Amino acid sequence: MRYTAVIFDIDGTLVDSTQAIHDALQMVAVDIRGYRLTPQEMELGLSLPAPQALAAVGLPSNEETVDLWLDHEYELWGDEVGPFEGVEELLDVLAQYRVVMGAVTSETSDEMNRGFARFAIKQHMREIITADDTERHKPDPDPLLACLDKLHIAPNQALYVGDSVADGLCAKAAGADFALACWRQDPVTEQVPCRVRLSSPLELLQLLNDA
Image 1 (tube, rainbow, N blue to C red):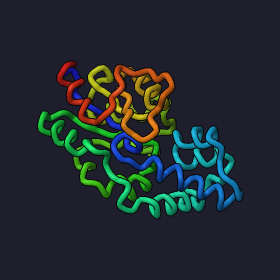
Image 2 (tube, one colour):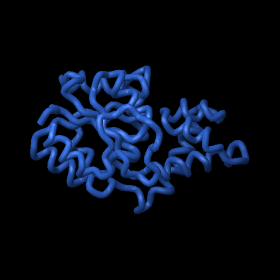
Image 3 (tube, rainbow, N blue to C red):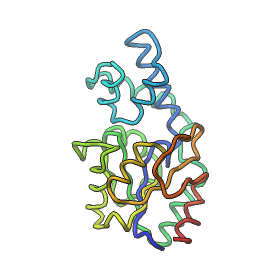
């Protein structure tokens, strides 16, 4: 395999949580402003860590509002939010091949521990970088570089897998190859700098075998 490590984004890539996050942010907007956010505001807000996302759409960025967003989000999770189909099998196979795995997310450690940590797939991640770990966040390269530094992996030996423009720009700036995950309900359709677009998690195995 060409890549020593595969680094994943979490929401919208490993875990099918995008709709819950989207709906919860709209609930916060209605609670505080009395009306819903525009599609443009949603696009702006959902690519940033929670405090910055709230500020970007004109909502209070204090801890109370972040907690309200999280409370709404986890109310919506139920049995509908979990790993995408094929993700668990993908990670199991990568582990068998002894591929080093990590994750980079714009969530805070508290958000990650309340959400992603409940899933068994977390055990495959040797390092997880959250919004608390770097001053700059995606699309800046800092989070991905921090993860690779902890793993002692050079950027040109890593593949980053994510579902957003910010993920693609982060990988490009870090000097790592990028695979765009297109398996969520509303995949990114605009031009994203990527080596390949993947329609399912298991397609990644073919890419790694061909690399």
